Image 1 (cartoon, rainbow, N blue to C red):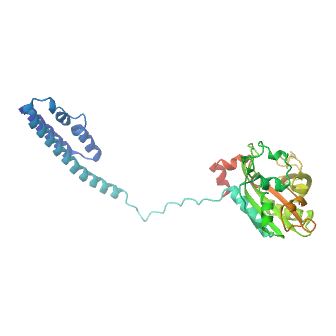
Image 2: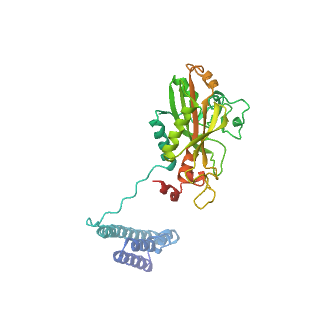
Length: 351
């Protein structure tokens, strides 16, 4: 090995060891390692170029350069351990907690989503009136969703424009009403149930969403009348919207009730359809009434789908309401889709 090459190897080793010893931080040490031992550094290049040297110089140069590289790597590793220990001590000293300082304010606890809270409020009202809460499948047979609810085979609700079909005879339920017949199959009268849950229809606008929530109610007993239905829903309306509310029934049509009605509650935003400034109430459109649900007496045909229910002996009433609509009206939310957008500016208002 030539004297110049040996001197250069010794010089690189000395410079490297001095730089490593002077490193003040692990970041500085990494820069030094790259400068002396990185892929583009002079010492590793000497090792890579050994094959280009005359045969008599290859051994001595390779041995000397490799010893220098190993010495520098050992120095780097040793200094790395020293610097890491110093930096850890510094960090621990800086992170000392002063236990005499006031504690950090606790993160506010979460709360129920407005739709869940509204559902539970509705359930509490009807449980207080003697009803039981039951649930059913969200994917159901068309038999329970349509046939057993007295829907004609050509009823428009059966079209793919109004119903999500999983198969020819399987649908995403369009209402929680299928549990009427399902529960009557399981339980003889008297029967007083409500059925909350998700339902699905191909709608999407300010007052409709493809997935929404309903509460179905069903009462079957002896000597039930439309007056019992009205009294039950009056108690519900006053519990939800205020003790001074009134209700009215309007004739309507549903395949599974006869007679069928829609129920309106007196407007809680105005007086006789007008605001204090004399303008028309935007909530009830000046009518002084707000539609909240559909209802009616159970069509006797439904009793033909189950055993133990005699249309000559038993009478029943049923109703169905949208949970979103109740929350929409009670809390004055302008667009039903806002319930599903997870916007904290809205959700934090209903803690």
